[in-house]
Structures are given as structure tokens and as C-alpha cells.
Image (cartoon, rainbow, N blue to C red; front, side, top):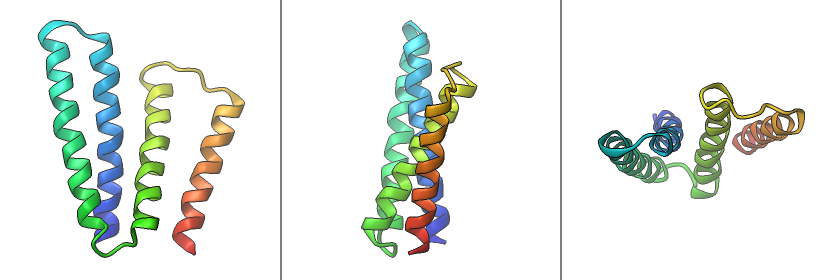
Length: 106
């Protein structure tokens, strides 16, 4: 169950970076709403990480959490914010995925 919580925590990390990206493009109350979303989702992400780390070693939980967030954020940037999807960018994302999987396996 704590692995599921950790995955949700990583997805929340993607959520707060998405909120930051949308806030950057907005003004006024719309921007304030995105910043409020950032605060809520980032707090949720931290709480879930702390809960998962009660049974998953922190040396494993933290890299998995940041890996999910990093991979998800790059994909959000490419798919939603139209950032470039260069060969090297994708290559290093795949090496990050392999590293997270390898860490989980050992």
C-alpha cells in the first residue's frame, strides 16, 4: 500500500509543477488560484511522501518520489507546455526511468 502512496505522492509533485507552469501564464485571480493549487498539492505530496517513508527506506522513497516528479514534469512540459522533445532530453529521461526501476529492484 505504501508504494501506491509513494506513487501518488510523486504524481502530486507533477501536479504542483503543472500549477506553477499554469500560474506563470496567468494573471490576477487566475494566477492566484494556480498558486493556491501549488501550495495544496505540494503539501499533499510531502505528507504522502512522509507516510510512505514510514515503511519504505528513505534512501529508496526519496529518489523514487523525485524520479516520478522529474519524469512526469518533463512529460507535462513536452505534452502540455510544448517544450522541445530533443533526442538527448528523451535519452536522459529514459536513463532516469531505468535508474528508478533499478533502485526499486535492488
